Length: 152
Picture (tube, rainbow, N blue to C red):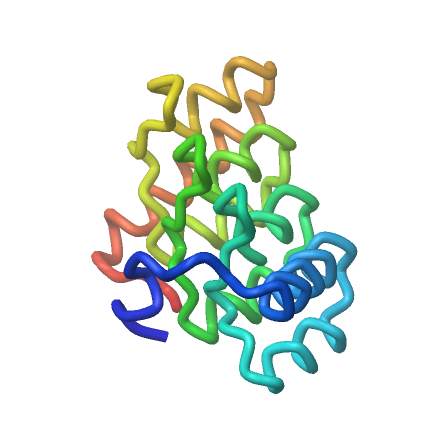
């Protein structure tokens, strides 16, 4: 999946919209076999629904680390934004999914990205009292800084 996948795309047709919704539902409910099947039918793993959500947003928000890793290893846009400019990292932080947070940062998630409310992922974690998420973010960012490399 390259830069062309993140460019503005025309609104999806009804058939495509149904397939995208199915992809996002599979990611949301940790149904990796369904997700892989839908992708094998030609639905991009970077597809967005009408609210700009991707499969990575849904898996990250719900703490589904196996799907997060599958998507990362298949080259999805780690910093994809929904209509409110939230990234998957924002959602993982909001919901306190520490392992997902670490994996996203190690894969290149931007920890300083501002959403429409001018809040970073860390701001979202602190706002919800998720200090353990803040610690995980700092640990993963330090690991990236120390090694100078990201895992993908």
